[in-house]
Image 1 (cartoon, rainbow over the protein chains, first blue to last red):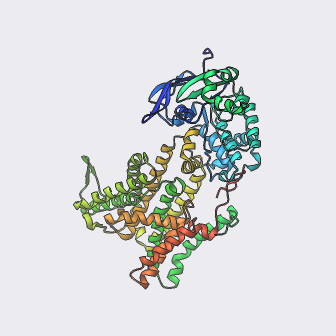
Image 2 (cartoon, rainbow over the protein chains, first blue to last red):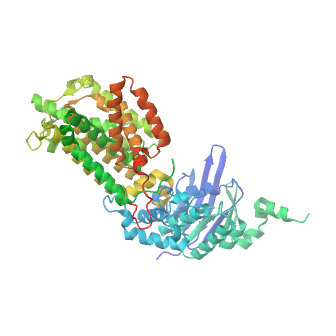
Image 3 (cartoon, chains in turn purple, brown):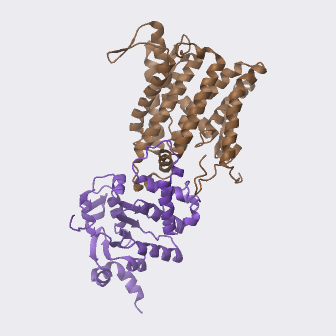
Length: 257
Length: 343
């Protein structure tokens, strides 16, 4: 057995688009089972960091390790199979397929190759049963037969989560999972994520500070592509640099005039 | 158009089988009304349909807009034509220092032609699938045109003028295919087998991956699916079936020329699929009958028949988004929770 090291290690990650430095020697870790929030003002490089970890963007420099294994040069699908589950900032489902099809396909993706040409995959209990169980878990069982494209925004976000979870990931990359959700949906999503805490590590990009402080074990604050601070929520909240750069805006607004 | 309640899968299957029955009864009916010439026309329609069905697999299900599909039809046709030519001349075909004897035997030539078409599709697919969208359309067109000009330049095989065959391929040494009606039924049988096999395929794990990649490639990759290799497999399979259509086409006409690969033929295949209904497999068969039927009728009315056909196509694209197939029998019922939508 390996000594329990970090599940995800990001080391010296750098990425520039023309003259704009989106990631500037970014380093942080996510421990097994931890909910790690990545926060920062708009343009701080959160989404760029997630895209590099997922493999959609090639870093100019730096290394990414998952459970000690270097994954910096692997394509997106290989990283997914190694345990990176993903929900996108902008909802990303398969709109023409039913909700159940969407999740069953996620199960299928992790069940070996798909060069199976004859048997009807929609009648394959090995795919449908786990998918149905996952829909029950996120509260979408009632709409399993609907077209995914016809779901409400909040339902789509839940579906994305179900698809990410169906592959039994070790690390969930959640890019603003509550974006565009109403208060009720958002609260339900926080509940679902809280229920997952401890079973799967999460790297959570989120703007809503209430959500961040409700869920995160640790927080990394980005600004201008650099890590401004990392620590537990209380320490980050008290960090003067963070207050100045980010929370400060809110803090100032809250000051009684 | 108003939304219609989808028909049950059983009713849809029934309608499709009814269509097959009608096609099976066509030759005796045409003989009855003393118009046997139309059997030949119907055979050409079935062959066009076969090529279009193979395009529908990658276009309708895989979202790959190939503007060079006729290339694979042409490759299959030329394999047939060139082997027949050598059989007739009695000299072997020299290929990379290997002497391949000419032959006319369908049981060897047809699978061989399909294999060569598959290899051509594999090679073109490997290069083309690195691109997407408009670039994919253009690069498939470019490869098809390259093959077209290559064949135009092959003076040994007639160049621009093509090759005339001495007769159709033999089956186990017999000239079974020489009979008009028998040949019709061979084409119909092969088309039916391909449509049924593809129907199974599109509902298999492979088929769902293919359709998933059409809807959202990024999501599929994030799920852990290496999208490109599944697309390539489908592209290759479609190429092989298009090659079979080429084989049948050359046997039907007893003639092969570069026109078979011309971009207008690729365009015609796209029109047939879109007219009939993308992603339906049966739709392209309907599309082939309607397109060739319209051509036949309109060409009798005016030599400028394309002036009428063009607007008809535009109307279909605008008002019958699911093609004629969707217009006639409605949308496919959504695949629901218990997997009953699978038809």
